Length: 289
Length: 350
Image (cartoon, rainbow over all chains, first blue to last red; front, side, top):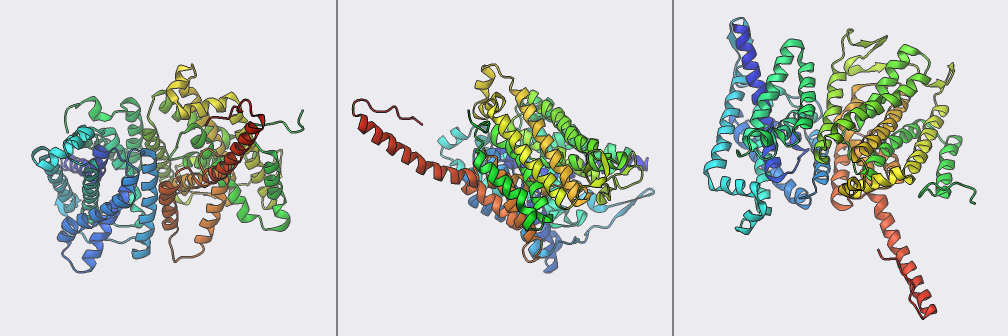
């Protein structure tokens, strides 16, 4: 019984992990059709921002929930102004430029923080579940992810900003004919996407530890989640594929070790992309957001 | 009849000059670093052939490079003599690429998804090979060794003579001959109708399809050929390094080869080779100092090239020189036309 609870909590945690690291990428890909290969580095930057603030004596919660998204959002804004805006409509070039950017960011962080692994302390102690010692922070991650997705849904569904965003996503030409400059919409979207990635990085920092190259660890999961989720549905598609991949990966991990879990998840993603090139949302939920 | 057979746009003069420099190099200089530069150049050539001419960008081409290295190491530990392992290191990446390519191209997957799938394939290999640390992960006598890789296997030997190993200067010549050979094969492929159709596909896929060419078959074929060359490069790399580790599959090496090709130039074969040699040299020099991180420079170069010269250095130079020669020809045509007075010469429209 306890074991079943542990398995279910681990599965929920994995689903939240994938959904959390994919959120920023999903917003950018869903609205702009830009594949940001520096996404993992934005997450990593969020973690390092939290670390720097915590070292400077700022409260850990404040630095991960507020400062990390703001700092990484600003980085995203600078990147959009300097690089991305020249490349709209050239998808492969954007992928290449953002890949260069990811190497550049790894280099800069290595210069500042050094290349050895560092840790952020975990602010929530573990607890006992029957015979098993569980990380209390995992529960916090699950809660944060649920809150984040509910928040994103509310913003997209009920605010003016969300209305403009959905309009631009459905038909950029009409949105611009109604007076919303697509360039501005893209700039804001990219900034928000980067801020979401920074948020994910800040929240995950106490769990994962930090390395300049640790962005590479997020990129596979978030990519396959967003791409198999499909471009048309930021929330439902990403959530659906997070649930799918999170469950499969954890079930296989419990059965035969964590590495095989990762590999099965990635192989499944390739097969799914082959079968449903428009993503899960393109196939099942056509009219959702 | 000309003395040299003409192979497409191959300029024999330049080719022989390059070959002579490469073959005479060991007489005057050390060969350790040039060997690896030639191997990287071959790897870049394999990607440049596919990306520059067929328009197919494999984000994880390092998967086939690494497969070549691993296949060679594993089979040479089991077999001992290096001829069969060398052939396997070319063949197996080609077969794997043919399977993955057929899956992607017959599924009509767009170029962006192709980028993601090829990247994921190399990530899978990286994760798998990094996790094979235990004794249970062994193929025959070869233990995969997890993150530490496979060390201490036999290097290439003269075919049929297992005792005569090729290392040092002979190894350099093997790499040089492999590069020159693959260059000639690429030129030859591009001069045939196969290569013309590939360029056609790059320019207008629908039109090629309507003309009756099976676009997925052509794409799968060039993907497989390119992977074979990458596998050969990986095999030579394993021989140079005398160890293979999972880092051959890493994101970092996947990015490096793309940077070499795009900086060197798309749509040329010399561009990727020069790009790999120059940037490979830069990488080796940078790794000797610790002030500036290597990825910072590489990333900066990639961003600047994509923004400023997206077609690469060599085509940009060609365009610059080409413009000057075109002006000269136009002037000549003009002069000739005036001499003839009556009818203007039919100038080439471009």
